[in-house]
Length: 310
Image (cartoon, rainbow, N blue to C red; front, side, top):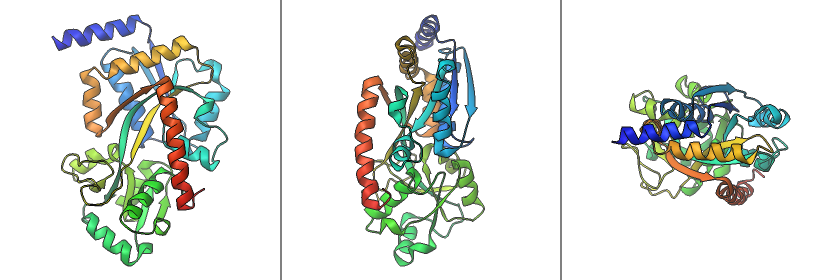
């Protein structure tokens, strides 16, 4: 029965127009943007909701290169969805690039990915208690990697966790890498002690024993991994990831994108991708997405001022 329903849904979606979607990814392979765009593309294609998907990685300028590109070439980008997340708010506040989400067409948020602190399986820090004890003793000894620049989301999440645990957030020794894949490599080769990243980027590696996640920024633990809240640290953070179109995208096209993403949630193909990555569903199309982003901009601005990043 469910197969018939899904089949009917897919056929209806194709009939209603989505022949192809080109995904523009503002970072390199192996990062959260890359995983989200390819995961969404996989679910849309495998469920029959979209006939053709393509992907383009365009890193540079903290995501600014891809944003500038989709704005400059807007007339040719009617079939393009650019993935982005909380960093578009952070980097715009910092002035890393001159544009903000206001310069793009807002389509929808799609998922929430929780923050995670990760160590090597043979690390001397086998628990949050071990890491916290070392940080309290000598914070400069604890090198924390992230897949983006200082004052970026990976940095803010780590600072927020240590601050919530009574530490000095400004004392976090943050080592920036260009994309999550490179930051993970830095952890595995021993250049750094801890990785601050999204749960979705490391959950499968944790399950295979390639890394060890010592805590996540959700209310409750996932797959036996404890949340910081469960360990007495009031650090909650969910990084949204979603899609933007080129500026002045025809409303009919926006509505089509919004509908196909909404239909995707009803498919078993999406549930497979979502569970594999440990994502939470976060569907906020159009005006809801805008209201959400305006609120997040205020919250993050306040936090960054407090930490001295703005």
